Image 1 (cartoon, rainbow, N blue to C red):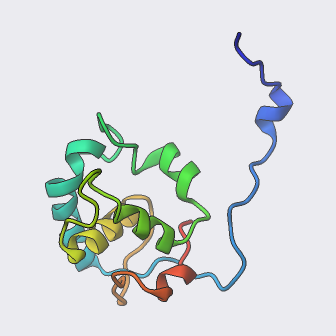
Image 2: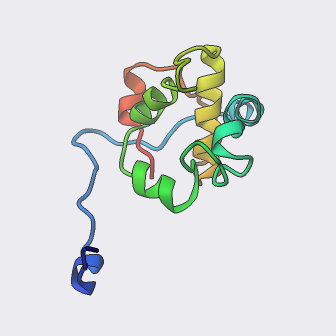
Length: 131
């Protein structure tokens, strides 16, 4: 039997996912975005789709699903999740492909590139937040 959800319950704001600590936007370069687009097309699009939202096998990496899942999370969490791809072959891609694909996905979702490169892992990613 379907569960009915009241309009009031639907309108309630979601609990924030943001953690304690210093916060900074993601740091990555335009070159990482360009290289990440190539990496995404080579390794990720087969499951997540050419538009990041039209995948047959993978979850959307843009749009409402991505925002609901990742806004308020650290770039570290998203980067670590990327390392679990592709399924069954975790961490099988070149390290540069993961970090560049993450930069591409962040830029696709509205983050702006700058002068500082996104590092491939490390504690610095814990202070960067997806917004």
